[in-house]
Image 1 (cartoon, rainbow, N blue to C red):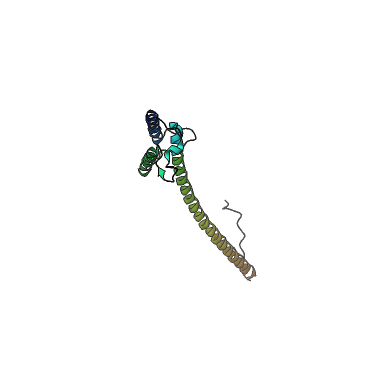
Image 2 (image 1 turned 135 degrees about the horizontal axis):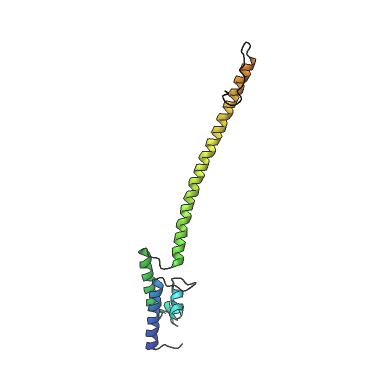
Length: 160
């Protein structure tokens, strides 16, 4: 396994730090996220350099840029806890989740209003049917009564 020179390591670390700053300010490449994979890609280093390595005897040692990966994740977490979202897709997901919640509330309120209106309609139809039945009963009572004179039904409005 070839070793890198101290000069190359320093240039790579500077490149990682510059990429880290760009990503954490929201300058993401198309299709990229604010994560280690994109950080490695933007810095031009291997993603595996951010993770621990295993020695031949089974012990672990830190990856060459593991400290930078941990710093990146720590800074990202600090920004997120502060309410700042560096990843526009994450911001879009949060916005859409809030919109879904608001729409679910609106649908629930509309369903409740619809149920109230349906109940009102049922009661109104029931009352109209009862009133119609009472009108029919009174008409048949009038028709069966002897000695009562029926008035002509009006044609709609007052006549002059």
